[in-house]
Image (cartoon, rainbow, N blue to C red; front, side, top):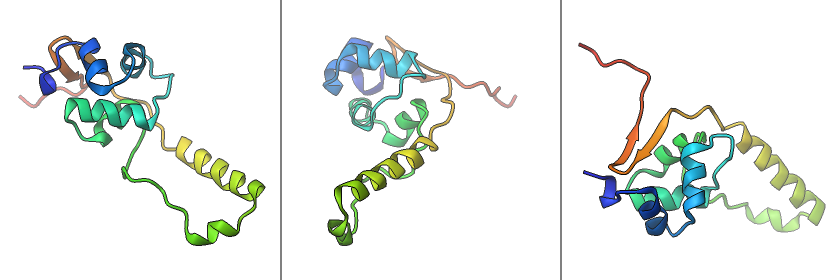
Length: 119
């Protein structure tokens, strides 16, 4: 049975509301980082935890909630805000890791593991 009743990449793209090329990049191109919006859309379409789909994309996502700056951020100037945003992006970039093998087939989602099952 296919995950969430989705039987192809095109169906996944349609259900997620994203372009089929974007789905293919998420699945086939680990060098092309997917946006959090794309990851959230795919997770919702597949009815999976967003952290699992983020992991496939090479992102260690501990929380799926927006970062809200404290009220004191209103006192920062334009250059200071840019600096804070650049710092956040640099820190987030270190949360990327090699993703596990991923394969989405026409029969649904299958995560391939390099581990051998216990016999």
